[in-house]
Amino acid sequence: MKSSKTIRSKFSFWILPLLAYVAFFSWLIVVIIVGIKGSLDVPGPVYLFLFFYMWMWILLFWGELRAKAIVVRIYDDAVTKSPFWGLIPRRRFSFDELRGYTTEQRSTRIGTFKYLYIYKGDKRVIKLSSLYHRNFKVLKGCIMKKLPALGSETYTVKKALKEFLD
Image (cartoon, rainbow, N blue to C red; front, side, top):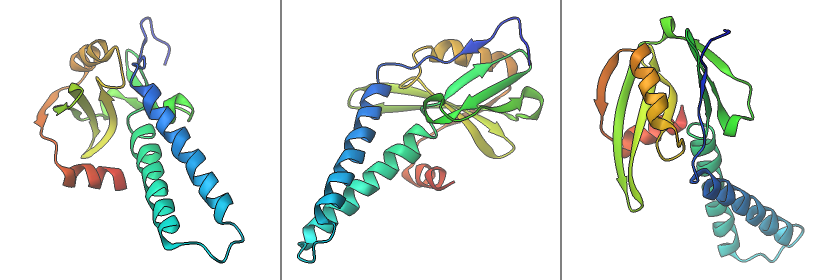
């Protein structure tokens, strides 16, 4: 896996609010649980708030940090990904075992962001985003040289939910 030129992804500013939200929801869940611990007289809305905050935490932690806040390294013969802001050990994919990549563009209130999905068979194994990776264009350029384009995709909530549950 030694390479003369290794490209490593770099996080953008937008990763910080994501981490702040995860920390905030973690703190809020702990405060609510400690507050209701041992109490028999807890109003129903407290449980509703707890459920809501736990759902938000799962959504942010599992959906965003696991899948999109990843460290990617591109070598001459392979690409690696390390989820959860690079805290989980790397998983290596040889370019020979990868099928190709697709692109997607999403518009939000804060701007338009591009996504690049790398496929192994029919499964997305790496998701790069211009929202979370400030050197997205460099990463995309390297991937375009190494893998065939499989077309572009359009965002649907159904597809996003299926991907979240995978």
